[in-house]
Structures are given as structure tokens and as C-alpha cells.
Image 1 (cartoon, rainbow, N blue to C red):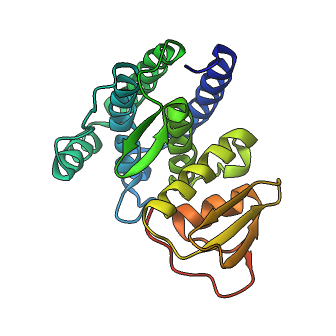
Image 2 (cartoon, rainbow, N blue to C red):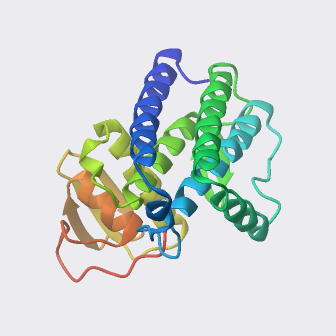
Image 3 (tube, one colour):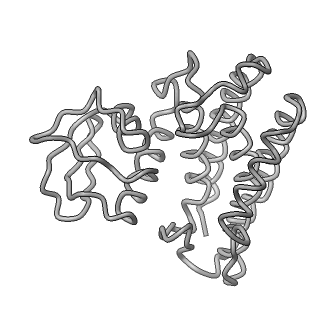
Length: 232
């Protein structure tokens, strides 16, 4: 069970981050939607389509946490790709509406997390997620992919706790994908260890998100050469 005050706080932050992303999306023209994003191989429309799909799919993790019955998020990787491609091909206004509807659906369904949880952890593509962190996972998706739109918005505008959610999600991915060993310290005082922790890495949360999620190491300080990271 998630403490109701914590869930309210998480959902409030999710609403704020989603609202800022919607404000950004609303300014994009058809041509800008079709332009490349920072997510390799994806246009901005693809990124928005992914989040529209993701908002509904992550509800299956809520189903899993509350029922104890394992859920398959997509029938296959191909099915996931097909769904994203179909959404991305929609007219601009319809795609934005799908994004908004998925965000509202996820927020509504998240209220179920205040009840008794059947299990403590769920699995997301090989990554173990605490059931109490499902909302934080969605927040991290919004923050990272808002950055991927490559607009005037920056990660610095995200709530500090939302930045923390994003770093934690990226670290979880690096661990699951056996990234090179490193000890990560943020300027805000957070610490994480991946593998043997051999390389010391320092930055603020914004810099860590850019590097861990998208390989942009411009704000990273390290005691040795930065490794090539697995894709997030």
C-alpha cells in the first residue's frame, strides 16, 4: 500500500510534468511533429505516441500490483512497435487527444494503489520495479521524453523529485543491462552504485539524466573515460 499522502504528492507532480509537456506539444506544428527527436530513430510524433501507448500500458502494472496476477504489457516487441507507429501516424490533434486521454486514464487508475497491494514488486522488461514506484516510473517517462522533444523546455524545469525519479529509472535500466561499473553521486546528495562501482561519476541530476538516458556527457565529471552506455 502507498501512503495516501505520498500518492497524492506523486500524482500532483505527475499532473504538473504532464501539463508542462502538453503545453510544449500544443505549440508544435505538423512539420515540427515530424522532425527528429533526441530519441534515436524516433520523430517527435513517435515520442508522443509512445507516451500515449505507455500511459495505458503501465496500468497493467497497477493491475499486477493489486491482483498479484502477472501481466504482459505487450503481446510482443513487434506489437508494441506497431501500436506506436499507428498512433504516430494519426492527425496531430488526434494524437494529442490520445496522449491526454492516456494520461488521465493512468492517473485515475493509480488511485487503486492506495489499497492493499498483492505483491511488492513488478517486472518491466526485465527491470524490477517496486509496486509503490509505478507512478514515479510514469513521471520519469514524462520527464525524459519531454527532454527528447528537443524544444525550449529543459530538465531543469522539472520538479527536483521528478528529476530524482528519472535518474533512478535510468540507473535501474543500467543495472538491468549490465552497464559498466560506476559509483554515481549527484550534486544534490544522491548516490547509486552500478556493478562494481569502479568509476566515480559526478553531476547534478539534470546532467545525470542527459547522460544515463541519452549519452550526453557534457555535464559529467568522472575519474576516468566515460564508458559507452547501453541504450535506455
